[in-house]
Length: 438
Image (cartoon, rainbow, N blue to C red; front, side):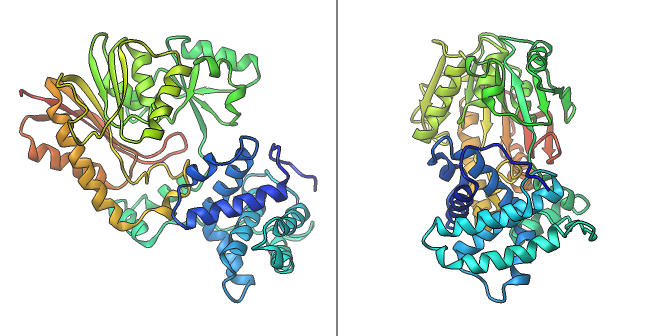
């Protein structure tokens, strides 16, 4: 068998070692995004690919580890094995990856790259050779496909899905265990979707329009079945296009910004929805974010997309408080609230490892605080769009019911409500309110 290598500029053994340490950081409670941001640019792509796949295939890989190692190995060895076994599984499920002997040799070499795994070369070699015979048997022997075991989610998470989605909970987990597709949003201030598709076609990139999602028409969404680096996208650095999930593109479309309107994006980082609103209309925009580091990402996005103007303010502030506010009411408010992020696991497979059941209650309280404050800043007859990237009803429909019960002047308008993860969209919740009077 010949290697079908994932393009990278880092030796595989070194990438395996770094990815295993990144997994260790996740298990200690750190966000994988934060860990990856600390890597050098040439390290990040392959380490992200390896660590994401290991988390997606966590259940299956640990069945093998348990089968071939009588006692639980030290965490550092466990994490290295999970990376290597995921590489075996990639060849079966995706037809992409490395020959079995390459994976074994590179994983053993990776042991020598890190002092905490140096002693375990013999163990790693023995376990991976046994796994390779099960996952990739010699030519001529019958190959058994792996069970369709989804990625790890904690018991309370699985119970929540079973309770709220008794007929579809498994399909949700299966959808999120797959690699998320690359979806683009064309900057329609520069190109129509058809014009940008032609540019993609000229450089050999196949794309497909996503015409609608959850009954909402999308005018700028493109699906790339075969992902490419953003550097290969025509005009990316001059703002012609952005990477944004189709479900996230509903926000600006539903809020329907109009020229001259004053709009607040209450929890704006990293700025994708802010930018989309500005691409759709010449409106007055306030992008608010509490996190100073993430604030810079909003400005960076607007710079790349050439959307900065004297009508756009990027402010640091807490959306649950009024201390940042100048007292001028808004025509429309986008409230993309902090949440469990349980709907975007396909793009962030570390999330189930980081969340705790108690987080949901504390997030509910935070969401309600922001809803209350934002409503005070909205003009009579104004619109407020409540959004979460969650599949838990406690953060979606439950909050919408609570809000309308608490505010007699809140009228619910048509919006998709709960959107479950699919092959073209992450999971989102949308509720649209009109302020009927002061």
